[in-house]
Length: 250
Image (cartoon, rainbow, N blue to C red):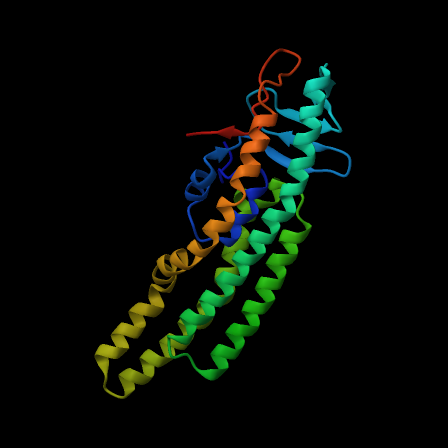
């Protein structure tokens, strides 16, 4: 299974939500062992193993491992609907992901507002948040493949955002700690130093709670995901193996 276990085009949510991927996967009780790429004239599913490792759908036609699979009329109709509905789902998920970016940005602003940061730090933080949010939204808008959100690529995006924002806040808190120490308030200085040193760990649970606001929007996608799973049920490759492009649990 993929590192992030969300199905199909829910993968962009992994990078904008400070939630466990499995928490979101269980929202719709859905998972997929495939990556999926939306092409202009087809939809490609691929995975390292097991076979079939490459499944391509195009207007009711099915190819596995590069070979055409004979289908009856009913199967062709169902796969045509599957492809259509999957393409229709992608912009809905992008919309939820963009909203997730907005919630995260607003949450970070509110968290920073409660830290007593200096005016220059707040202004720079706001600028960086705007730049990072715009970049992430652009990536969400242009991505047509879950490969864009896997493993190293996803970690790199998260690490880039953290390295852009957290040191700025930590530096301001460190300066506050130094000023408190110079004023003789050693207890406040120690508290501020601890806050600066553990900034990411302290922010994570609060941001996690804020992002729960997205859950109803994710739940609203579940019926479409269950419909996709239903449409592909029973379709097999040339060797009689089920495709299982999407699995729905209990």
